[in-house]
Image 1: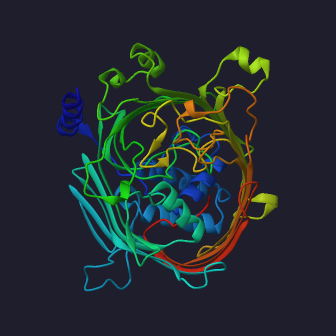
Image 2 (image 1 turned 60 degrees about the horizontal axis):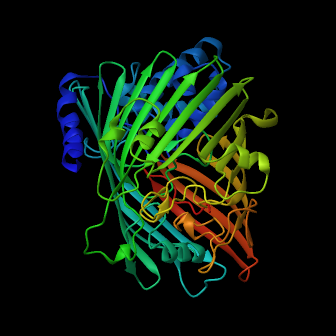
Amino acid sequence: MQFIAKSILRLSVLLFPAVSLAQSTYLPQGSKHQPFLDRLEIKLQNNTDLNVSTLKPLSRRMVVRVGEYADSIQKASGNLLSVVDQYNLTSLLMNSSEWVQGDTTGFTSKRPIWNTFYKTRANFLEVNQPDFFLAVNPVIQQQQSIESDNTDERIFLNTKGLAIRGMIAKRLGFSAYFTDNQERAPLFVQQRIIGNDAVPGVGFYKDFKTTATDYIDARGSINFTAAKYLDFQFGYDKNFIGNGYRSLFLSDFGNSYLFLKINTRIWKLDYMNLFMELVPQTINISAGDKLLDRKYTAMHHLSMQVTRWLNIGVFEAVTFGRKNRFDLLYLNPLIFLRASEQQAGSADNAIIGLDLKANVAKRFQFYGQFMLDEFVLKEIRGGNGWWANKFGIQAGAKYIDAFGIRNMDLQGELNLVRPFTYSHSDSVANYTHYNQPLAHPLGANFVEAIGVIRYQPHPKWTTSARLILWQQGTDTANSNVGSNIFMSNTTRAYDYGYKLPNGPRSTGINAQLLASYEWKENLFIEASALIRRLSSDMTSDHNISVFTLGVRMNMFRREYDY
C-alpha cells in the first residue's frame, strides 16, 4: 500500500508537466505584500480571484493579474489607491515581474553590481529569458534583544540562507528556501521548546551555547498547471487555510511537511485537495540518529463565491490513526472524507468545518470559521458539558483606512476551542505534526481575543501594534482537562461538566509594538517591544519584556505571538 501511494505521487510529478500549461510559483510565507493584498480585496470587493482565495500562499501569477487590474482602475479613476498603496503595488509587481504584462523598465537598478547582480531592484540575481526565469536572493535576519527576566543571557537570532525561484518554458515552476539559524529565544519560548522537544515553526534542532538552539529551515516545491484549471504543487513547505490572524483548520505555525496539493479553480469555485505526510508524536525527537515514524492527513476545501461580495467554504480533514501507512481510500479527490473514514472502520480522526468572508462597503471584511471535531446533538441540548462536544469558532473583522486615515488598518478576532478538540484516543491520529499543533498554537480548551493596528504613514515606514489576550485550562501530569491535544482523550477524569475554559486557568497577555523601515527593496531595519504576562492558578506569575533591534532581508519576520 505504502509503495503504491508513493508511486502515485512520483508518477504525477513526472507525467503532468508533459501536458502542463502556464504555471506560477507562490508568494512566500509571511510575504510583505499580504497586508496590501488584504486591502486590495476589500477595496475591489467583487474580485473573484481574491475572494475565493482562502488557501495561502497565493499564486504570483494570480496576484499580478489582480494587481494589474487594480492599476488599470487607478489610472482610469485615480481614487482607488493611495500613494502608499501605489508604492506597494509597484513592489508587488516588481517582485513577481515574470508575470507582468506591461512596462517593466521601472524595475531595473540604476547601478547594478558588475552588470550582473541587482540588475533589478528586487532580485540579487535575475535571469529573465523567453523560456527560462530564475531569481536568486540572499536571506538574512539578525536580531539582538534584551529580556527583562534574563539579563545574564543575550537573546538573539542569527539567520542566513538563500531563496530561489524559477520557471522553465512557462510549464514547470520551482522554488527553494534554505536557512541556517542560531537562536536564543525568550524564556517562555525556551520552555515551549523543552516541553515539545521542537522549535516552534521548525521542529528538529540541536543545542547551541547551552540554552540556545541551532536548526535548519529547508523548503522547496515544484508546481505546474494541467488542463487549464488544475494547479499542482508537490513539495516540502507549509500551507494556511483561512482569512484571519489564526486558523482553526490549518495554520503555518508548525513545522514544514511533505505534501501534494491539487487546486481546481473554475467559474466561482476553488477546490483544494491536500495530501500531507506528517510526523506523529515522538519522544526524544531531537536526539537524532533515528528514523522517525510517519502518519498521513488528507484535506479538502471547497470555496464558492455565493454573491459578488460573499464567499462560503466547506472544509474536511482526516488524520490516519496508524503509523507508516497511507490508506488509498483517502485518495478519493471528491469531498466527504468522513464517509471514507467510516468505511475504514472509523479509526481515524476526522474534522469538518465551514468558513465565510464578506467584503462590505469597500471598507470592511467580516470573516469566520466553524470547526467541528465531534458532537452529539442531544448532549448539546442537555447542556451538561459532555467531553466529546468538540468544536472551535473564529469570528473576525478588518477595517481598512479606519476613521478616514489612509493606510491605517484595524483587525479584531475572537477564537475559542472546546476541551479535547483536535485530540484523539491515540497519539498518532491527534491533529499534530512534529510535536506541534497543526492549527492553533494554544491547542484546545481556550478563549482568545486578538487586536491588530497596522499603519503605513509613508511608503518605507510601517508601524503596528498587536494585543493578544487568552484564557486556557491548565493540564498537569496527573490530570487531563482538555488543553493538551497530545494527551489521549481516554485519560480524562470524567465525562461531564466541561466548561470553556475548563480546569485551573491560566490568563495571558502578549502585546507588541513594531516599527519597520524598508531601506532598500526587501531590506528592513526594525525595532520592537514585546510584553508578555502570564498568571496561573497552578504556578507563579511569569512577566517579561523584550526589546529588539534587527535587520531582515528577503524573509518573514520571526514572531513570538503565543
